[in-house]
Structure formats: structure tokens, C-alpha cells
Image 1 (spheres, helix red, strand yellow):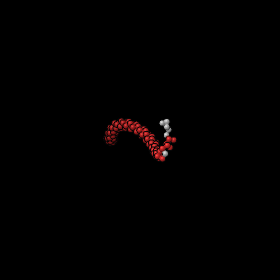
Image 2 (cartoon, rainbow, N blue to C red; image 1 turned 30 degrees about the vertical axis):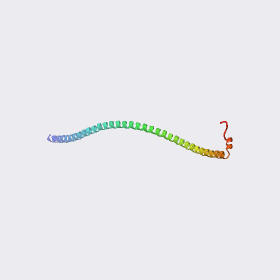
Image 3 (cartoon, rainbow, N blue to C red; image 1 turned 45 degrees about the vertical axis):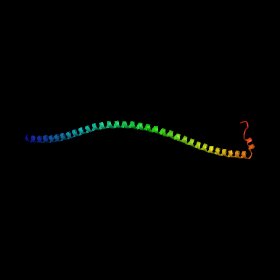
Length: 132
């Protein structure tokens, strides 16, 4: 029996060693599990914060897009006004040229009539309506 006891003690000792080793692994795994859970909880909080930040940035982006749209509309309107004003300036320049040309003609006619009146005052009667 002594031999059986020694064999059984050896088996028990091996099992006890294995149990202690497995308990050590179990403790390490439980510590890792605890750490992973804590990290998971922290990541959940961080994720919630990031989702909130994303939502705020999305709202800000939408507001900026709306402002950009309004500015583009304003630029389009101002560009249209510039085009219209440019056309108006061109028309006014043309009209100014026409007025200058008419002034020159009037001055020419004025000198012509003046020269006629100096040479022959009676010749003016055909240009002047006596009923006026």
C-alpha cells in the first residue's frame, strides 16, 4: 500500500501543481478580462463622445453649406448686376459719343448759319419759320 500511496501522492501532487498552474492562468485571464471590460467601457464612453462630436460637426457643416449656398447666390446676383452695369456703361459711352457728335454738328451748323447771316441776312429767312 505504501507504494500505491506514493503513486497516488505523486498523481495528486501533479494534479495539485496543474491546478495551481491553471488557477494562475485563470487569475491572469480574469485580470485580462477585467482590463478588457474596463477598456471596453472607456471605448463606449469615447465612442459616445465621438458620435456627439460628429453630430455637432455635421450640424456645423450643414450651417456652413447653407451659408456657402447663400454666398454663391449673392455672388451670382452681384455678377449679374456687374454685367448689367457694364452694358449700361457701354450704352452710356455710345450715347456720350452720339451727343458729342451732335454737339459738333450743332457747332458746325451754328457757324454755317452765322456765316450766312453775315454774308446775306435775308438768306436766313428760308431756315426760320416766321410763324414761330
